[in-house]
Every structure is written in C-alpha cells, then in structure tokens.
Image 1: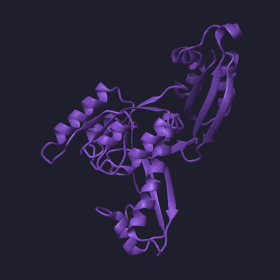
Image 2 (image 1 turned 180 degrees about the vertical axis):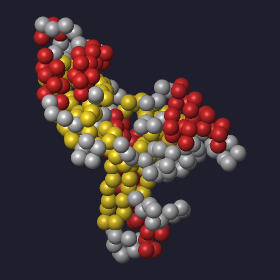
Image 3 (image 1 turned 90 degrees about the vertical axis):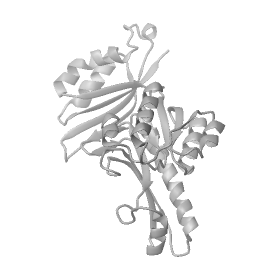
Length: 291
C-alpha cells in the first residue's frame, strides 16, 4: 500500500531548495500531492510544506522507505547542505490531545463534535477541568473527565497533577478551551509549541471580567477571537488564527456574547486542525500557516 507523508522544512532562504528536496523524493518514487512554500523577507528564512505519496516498495521495484528514519536518512545530505530544520509525519497520524476547560462549554462542544464527525485529525485522550461542570458533556462524547480543582493554596499541587496527567496520557497537544487558569512559566517553557489558547480579541482595550459587557458599553463594531500558542507572556504567544464578526447598536449583550463565543469556537477548532496537520511553522515570534 502507498503511504502519504507530510514534510515540513525551514532553512535560510537561497536558490535550489525545492529542486533539491523534490529531486530526492522523485528518486525514491515519491509523488507530491500538495506543496506550499514561503520566503520571509523579514527573517530571510524559507518555509516548505509538502505532502507526498510513497509507493509500495514492491510496486515501484524500490527498497522500502516506510519509516521517518528512512526518509530522514535519504534527505540527510540535502538537509545538511541547506541547514534545514526538518520534520516528517504520516498523514494518517492523529495528535494525542488533552483539552482543558473551566465552565464555558462552547469551545469544548465544538471540538468534541468536530472530533466525533471526523473533522479533526486528533485523538482526544481526555478532558480536564478546574471545575466539574463539563464532565457530563465530555462523557456524553465518550471521553474521560479529570477534575483538577485549583485554589490559591493548591495551585502548585494542581499543576503537578496536570503535568502527571500529560505524561501518563502521552499528550502531544494541550488545548485551552476557555480554561481560565494561568499556566506557570516553567510549564509553559516545558510545553512550548504544544499548547494552544483561545481568547477574545478585545485585548488590550477591555481587560478583566466581562469583556463583552465592556465592549457593548463602548459600542464596538467588531467582535473577534485569537488562537495562539501559549508562552509565559500572558496572551502574547505566536498568533495562529483570528477572525471577526460585525455587530452594531441593535445587538444586546447576550447577542454580543453569543456571536463572540461562535467566533471563539470556530477559530480554536481551525487552529487545532492546522497544528495537527502540520500546517504551522515558526518564523521567530510569528507563525507561517499553510492553510
């Protein structure tokens, strides 16, 4: 059987990169099914994402190239020549994902529905929350719920319990689906590039409690949401996806909140899907997203 792969590359920008990489794949009998590239004028870096099919060894009369190590070995000389950072994953790989929640259900509900409908290439290995109120929603979709309560005096112990859960479940991605707790700088550093958060896009104008109420009082015309990777700088990690919905003076606060939650859920789901499909590459503090 043929097997499809995702290859992601970043390296200093120069001529001949695509030719060199695709030449190696062609020599192995590979067939490219999707190709996207970007040359950053700011960082002088080159970014490439390829999907390609490797034929069955018997059909192509070739040595079998079935594992990432085999392909990496074939690409080693090109990677050295162009100083590449390179990653490979099978297209069928599903990212082991832990979803963290508090009390808001809209983002979790969208993730669980899209997961059950086969729209997200992830395996949700558990849902954890500092409140117990979303247990029934998680269990309705067939997922274990882990209650990790947090108080001012138990925050360190709760984070230790969360870290153990991440290790025990072999978690590759953590999604903060309106999880209203701040992760410690140490945990953020340990999980860098593996945690995605969602929040409204009113920051820094409307901070703290009830941002939609504040926005309504100020008569805003656009409601938005931002999904980003989590860093120790609160809500300032590399942005993955954003979207907006227009509002006007006819909308009451309840409609503001509903529209905002709809945008949050959709933006978060797209960010999770793009991460799992290997469509996000880092360009310093910015992301390159091949969607």
